[in-house]
Image 1 (tube, helix red, strand yellow):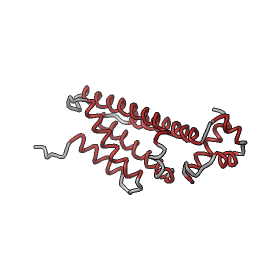
Image 2 (cartoon, rainbow, N blue to C red):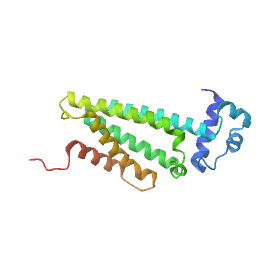
Image 3 (tube, rainbow, N blue to C red):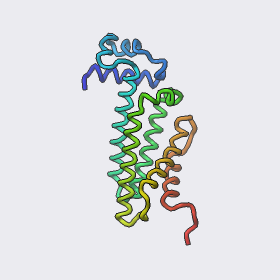
Image 4 (cartoon, rainbow, N blue to C red):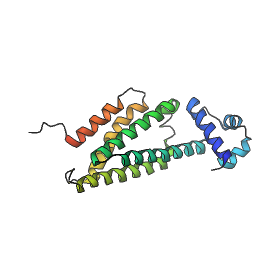
Length: 190
């Protein structure tokens, strides 16, 4: 990647994290990056394009972290647990880093719609693979995998919500308990 483009992204990332997307201007990014504004327009047509690129880069990093967590686990249950744990901790890290974005998040949803759609497809594919692996190993009971994936994804999104409304939660504990309930249910077994 071009050095100037990287500098624009790094400066914009820092400024957006501090001030939010609405309050960050192309003029300020150019000044802090020590570039002419016209040079910036060679790489990005506006700050929303820069923001979209930042989100895309974060998304690629996120995918790598999730895949690494899964690869380190052995059983299908542990792979799903590590997936959920890594996902939640990464989102917490991002929400802490981008506190100013959490209030703007929904306002700028359209800038990252494609990235979110790609992640949705990645998550569904990953969870499907892990559930099918568990079924093949006779660890999980045969089930409608699409429904199971949808239910796990909904549960994960339920854990995600407090991060964006600045509520404290114990992500490790909550993620672990959610997965245990999904795997074992809440009924007493005889």
